[in-house]
Length: 90
Image: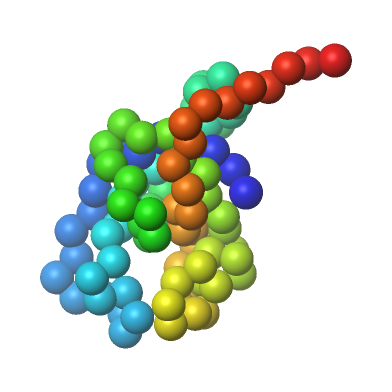
């Protein structure tokens, strides 16, 4: 599981079976301070996230299992919208 910031949307006229009606968003992975940690990626939205939202995502097999029907071929899925991050260092 990792954090990301929604920066855009993807419009696709045709989608793989199981992705119909699912929103695709462009997300930049970020660290706990909100600083980008990697390249932007496309993630399927399962929680109705919007532009600018801080979200948490799952990748790989877990992303495929986050959809109904399960095991749709995706690399990343947004599974939550983050309200706050409290990362205290010991």
